[in-house]
Image 1: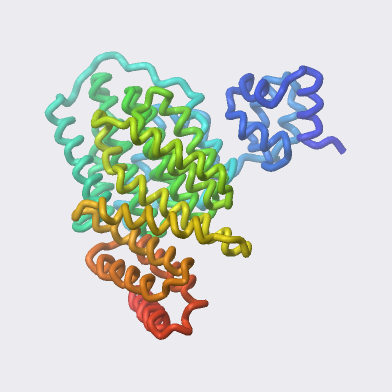
Image 2: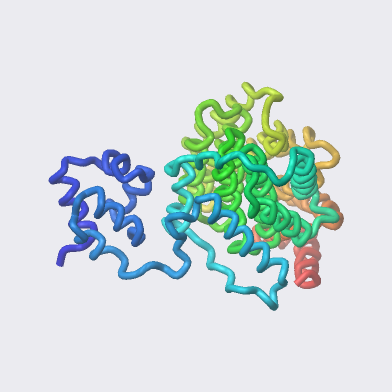
Length: 450
């Protein structure tokens, strides 16, 4: 029986098309096409129809693809400004209504082609053309909205104190209401940028709380809103959001997805993107390599990130300024810790990688500004886990105790989850009374917060 893949390969051979040639003809990412051709991923219904069209298969490929659309497949026009506004309204209405009155069920977490194909239009779909000049609000009103979005971003980035998701979604709903009325093209673009910023904050708050399907929804909305802005800075903001989405996929143990998302972000940001933005993206790429134990690839990506950062200037978007040298060094150090853990699990020598991790994270702690409490908490937890790999039990406990003191003053579900990672990793060292006592304290902390 002929399969979709059999027919696809036969058509490619007949038309003398390589994977890259087919990707170009179909206007899809080459890495995605390669995975479908080689049987790593099954094609989506939409992709099967597209290949049928460009290869002139007269419906044969489409017939061999998935039998029906998945219920939550995004329609082809999901990236139009009108559709972006509609999706933002649906999300805001559902969240502001509360969990007991949601108008539709929350989606599942998306992985692999289900997620990546929804992001592909970020680089393949043309930027929307400006609408005819009209006007309902002026620059002053837009500046007020932009200032509010940036304030919420700063609060979310630093510590989340005083910030509730409904405040963010309420502001998002206000922007949606303004976008529902025809505006001047420049005003419309700026409103879409504000919508993207607010959706990114909402996504990050959901991610921190462990609500991954909700976080993905908002991150995807943010990317589409940045694209719909039609403004040059929308490319950089979209890349920034894709970096956050890649981080979430790493948290979900999907490093392959993270790599693909970072590639999309780098392509979309462009070669002329500020070095600081490219450095931030390359640290995400390095992290994905670390999760798969690719030591040399990690060294290469981390080295590129450091080179890019050394070329950075102060002329960067405000949302990228939080990626300072402390964040760079701390992220690279956390990657070394992850590599060391992979090596240790394989019974390989991990001492040098562990030592690098300790040096980098210690430097990050020295560079952190006092207001970066949440970042310091993550650094301390990472340092404590590195000390465990080095067998330095007392120093590990001291570091995690300092992290707990910070976590008592902030609200971060992700930091609490990292504390429990230390709890699990410290189990083999529980014969030391100081480790056993700390593990008992963390277990009690987890029970109280459940």
